[in-house]
Image 1 (tube, rainbow, N blue to C red):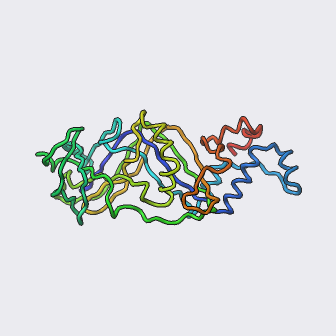
Image 2: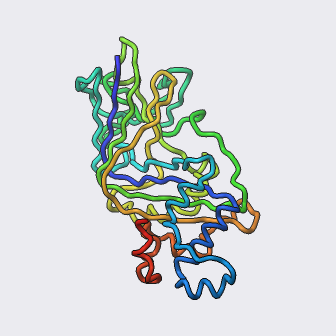
Image 3: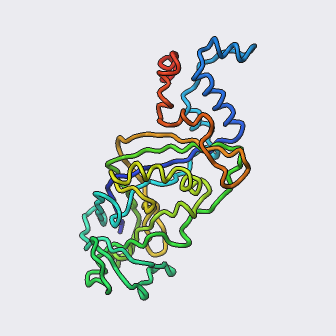
Length: 295
């Protein structure tokens, strides 16, 4: 049998593009072209041929380390926290009714089962229960973050540039689809949260440098916070969610580290160019914007 789990709601998706020192320099040179008229650029670069600047996100996508960006978060809250979150389930294409989503406090994964023997409370629809609900087997579980499901942490060289592409959306859909056994019941599914402050280096840098600003901006409107969904557990296997959405605000933030210190990541000196995906609205600073932006 094939199960498909869908979770619909608002959120903020974040990807990270890592550029090495050489590509970082090329991007900065391209930025200098964007804010200077050709005559001034030629005066500052004698003997060099002027070529129109390239749209920055095109350069970043092309120069990204390993060829692809890293997903930081899909940014959708679970039904316990989020605003206007809708969860649906189907089996072999047919809608499957379930009793709701049951939050387990301090649940731990043991082999392929969620151990509830030591649960002191359960929560559904904002109501806390001291005993397991009678319809527990018909509930989808939400267990927060689970040890052993985090991604491996890698180092980010201090001379690299990290570019975070941030897109907020009001209507998104997380989906996960996978095969299940014939004895399937909803309580075998457990929603798992991200844990950005204890994950990959790119995620940790995002959490300590960007996350608070996003929460301040979007917490009231869409309930955005740190407890965002990552995937769903079924019999010990974690299935990551995929996200689809339309529209939304688009932003870019860049961080660099010239200090050599692990905590030394900060907005680079031309970070104002990253405030929006239009790259600071270069119509205001470059009369040549329209001639090259779509080329």
